[in-house]
Amino acid sequence: MKIAKQLKDTNIAEYILYMFQLEDILRAYGCDADRIVNEYVARFEWSDEEKEAEAEWLSWMCTMMYEEGKTESGHLLSNLGTISLLTDLHLQLLDSPKQAFYSAAYYKALPFIVEYRQKSKGEDALELQNCFDLLYSVMLLRLQKREIGKATQEAVAAVRHLIALLADAWQKERSGELEL
Image 1 (cartoon, rainbow, N blue to C red):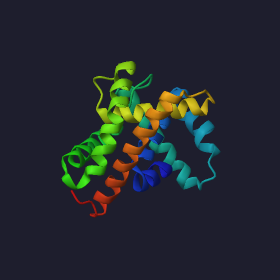
Image 2: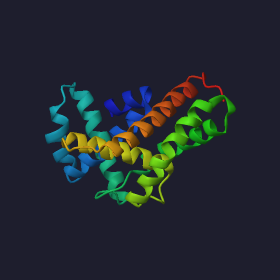
Image 3: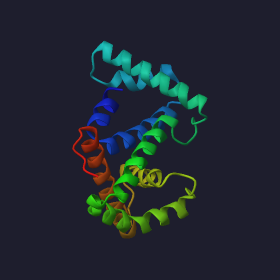
Image 4: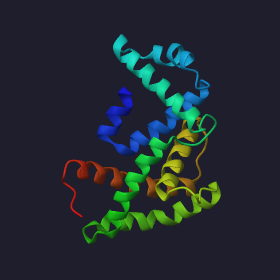
């Protein structure tokens, strides 16, 4: 909760990727609250109160994963809801004549998004979910020290640029600085 809150307040894109990673971490522990507390939360050098709050939050996430049928794969509705809110902003940015730079970044990334959707069978997902899934997949490949092909690197660069612009617009909208 502590890290997630910090990321949500500073960079919504990093927050979403962190939440995807946290879902996978909880799955790795079998969504077992005791194991998560003893083997995961215990490693953080936080106060007892912070650890307790984190343990409660992660336990709540595990409960949600069970209730939503996400213990094997998929994303929590709360994370998809955040992506849906980002999608609303994304569409506003595309419609705004003041955001031509964003539109240009989107149309540069669009062929890569479409290709990823087809390869991953993600046609039912929101377009931005495909973007985050692509970025998360490549992040996992890098953690595994696996080679990433030139075409994938090009796709990731275009999608990363689009998502960075969107995250910046999100922050500006939250602070009342975004001009549409």
